Image (cartoon, rainbow, N blue to C red; front, side, top):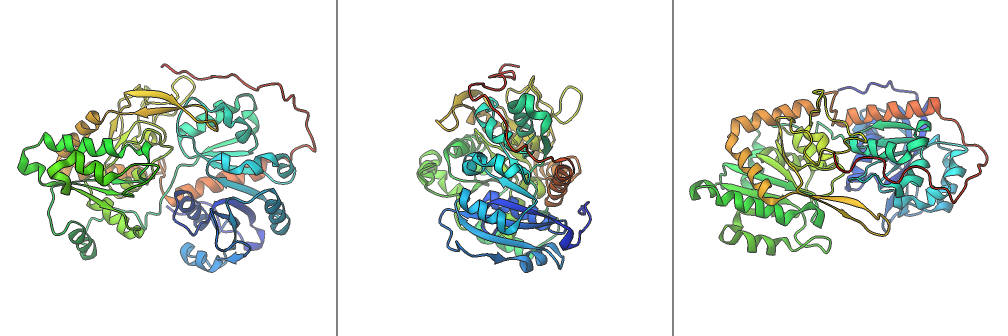
Length: 478
């Protein structure tokens, strides 16, 4: 897919101030931001307040236009970085606004990192708009986010669920906002099906598996944190193996690209040793940082990608799997629902509403052939002081084991056929889980913003004792 929006001479482009993780690092936020910058730099000029916990380059201004040109295939991008600790503060933001004079601010990541921006939003929006690429993992619709969403002129939801949540939270003031669906997209030059003999790929596979030949390979790629449900996933794999004849069970392997031990997760080698017993060698951990070419190899050698997360805003590993033609097993929650393409009573791709805000109750059972959903059997309200309530959608490992067996029983040819159906849909205009689709959606949204935005009044009178909107404005049982 080509970029739909024409190149604009550099001196005529709108300038966007991006505030998020430094786009040169490898976090999920930084990766998404980098893809947006690279694929829109022919249409916008970019300046980034580039965040890190303790940034080693604080105080510098870095010109990365030359590197961006090479990635984008153009000659006149304008991309500058101001490294900062965290995401800056009110003082540093005011200084940068005065120096760069941008036409808009573009935010990505959890809203609680931007408290200094929300506190000065009236000051900012008297001059320029605020756009926010945001995500929220689950319902109930977070009324505690209302001040953050209300401080934005453009809300781009990464999942269909997030778009619905943005609208539900804003209620009466939503008419003054622009809402757009902008799902994650990955570069199809980096993630793609390997359909012909590739000696480098075969060598990678040979080294990774120590020369062993397996009939079935399950793959997990995510962080070692509790909500990812990794011990449950290992247990599901073990139960799946127990249901096979020994000679067939011996030819299966589970590869996990994750950290071995973390305080936010658990000690996975101990979990694997305890659960797998004498089959522990059929669990293979990869902890090294890999290039995207090697990640593409991992998805291509896998027969299926699995992600049972109990809270998941999107699930980028599923996207990467689809773009390589690999089927997915996933818990039905958050943005992972989008990637399974559930179909509603009108035979259309399911879009959440106040009446049916999520499909985590299994309201709809028809879905894409590439998807093997695991429906949550426990939906409990969890929370913390900053985020008082959110559903935790937990599925049963027994159900996950059945889905693994279902994928296994298809055989290699049918698995590949279904995986390629997922690939074809993922790169289509309907799904558009590619970098270029993502960039086109961002450009359309920002162009609409610039055409319609009106500056805030100099002041407004607010009744601080009045709570806007209903407390719960969508169904819990449906």
